[in-house]
Length: 240
Image (cartoon, rainbow, N blue to C red; front, side, top):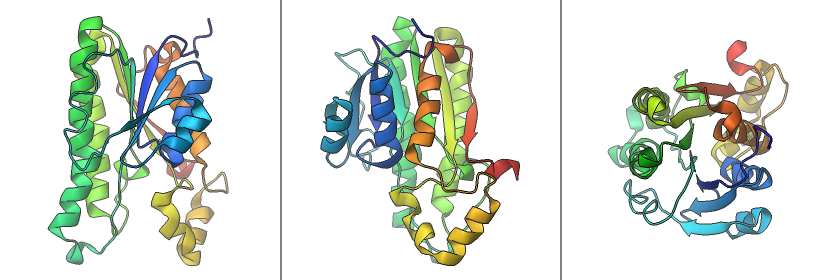
């Protein structure tokens, strides 16, 4: 069997209704996994594309996945669900701060915890967290998003430290500027879009499919000795 095959594995992909999550769900299905596409809104389109199961999970409740891993074996967890709010630091509200941190960081941690409690006794499992370029940089006008994505990178390393010797691989992907709902405002601003494109050595915005292959790799046996990595898939942005 190919070391990149996911045959015989079950993967839960959060935020799988559109964009990066949808592309990962489809790619994992194509690699042989049984996929559960989770989202706060319908994942029917993804289910049709990937031939997978749908699950409604709203991570506005950070404990939304606490019971998901009981009574079923899930081998791969992809934490892709996330939100963004934009405002100057001096104008940012506590409500928007809390909402972003709850979904992007708190829910991610407690979903990983619930997965690990089920997977550690089996001695095998893969977690792929979706980080960001703003796990490394500051950005502008997205303070809780930047804080949450720095946190995702840190938690990925911490969990790898605790669980690698017990058979769980925990890694993250830091997407660059990808054509998704989260970047719609940037792509609609001609000046910001040009400034971003001018810095990307690849010369284009990324596509959700550009992230999917890396997720399949990290979830596969080919990545069994990859632990605590945050892989940037950014068209060369961070190398610039």
